[in-house]
Length: 407
Image 1 (cartoon, rainbow, N blue to C red):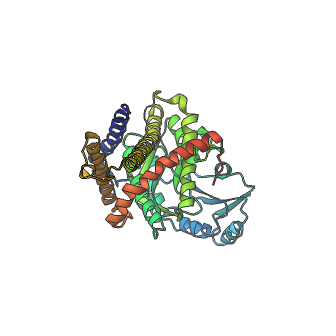
Image 2: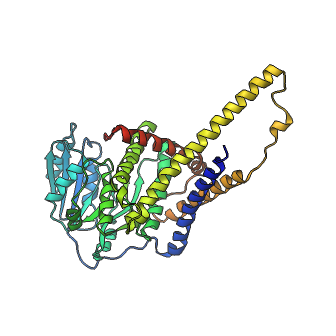
Image 3: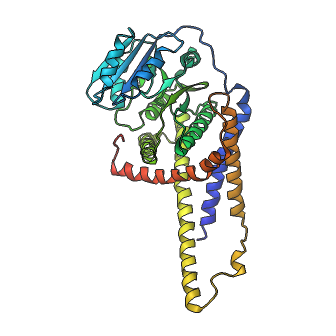
């Protein structure tokens, strides 16, 4: 297939372009990565904690919020029709924390719960904390300073998995730190495309202006961020503080979570497709960035499957011919591998990508990352990332099937 080398070259070019792009951003801003502005005024803060069947973590989440070293106006725990002991635990904590409030409602999903909470919130800033996430004590203090700039509508920070025992958890620990690092780099080109659920801080007037969360989108945090971008507000990423969360510890749960994220991303691209290449960050950077990543995933899987199938078929035919013609199956000529330009490109891409991963983990040691084993980093680079094209394909199927359940 003559056009395969062209597709392969395009795939390589886009991949190397994005790696080079992030490297340039890093070297231009490396001295300021962990800086954060000090707030010039005090902000009243309302914290929203949406919870559905979170009896194992809700108490520790609320405790960690009240341990934060910044004054909080109120914490609104939103019980979204839980069928376990979530409501009972929150009611017990009401006696311990006078500023804690319970909003008990029928199940409507995370977006609906947060919209109800926004209407109740009294603070200038609204902070969303997932019910299985524990913010660092200094998180609010280090994030509020961004809001001295009236152009800022939202801010987020580093997300770190608490559980890192088995191989999957270790892979996610590496992945989350790479995501945080690249998200900070994207801030320098106004490219932060999501303020994720574990900890996100919003200006309440901006939430009201854009209409709150989309209750039908599977990634309501991405969709909200895109509307904030469309409204002309900046988003900030604080690399000097963090929130811990619970990462999936089994492959099936991990796959479902990532597929949900991918389907939600597809929903966002479809919803905002008319903004593509229009003036503004959303049209000229965010959407192209998402679309390129989408096709990189599909293209990588397509090339891999094509090469795998053609090699299997050719080897099978060769084996059948050799046996039927009494020809030796293996000769010295079979052991000679002819290097090609495409092979060299593939090796270069892997080496550059692996070096970028090592550099990222080295930089992120300034926060909460501990030294990682080379074995785990190699497994992440070689095997873990290969799974993502499968998720991309699965998300396309589920999107058109309209299988948009939260699971």
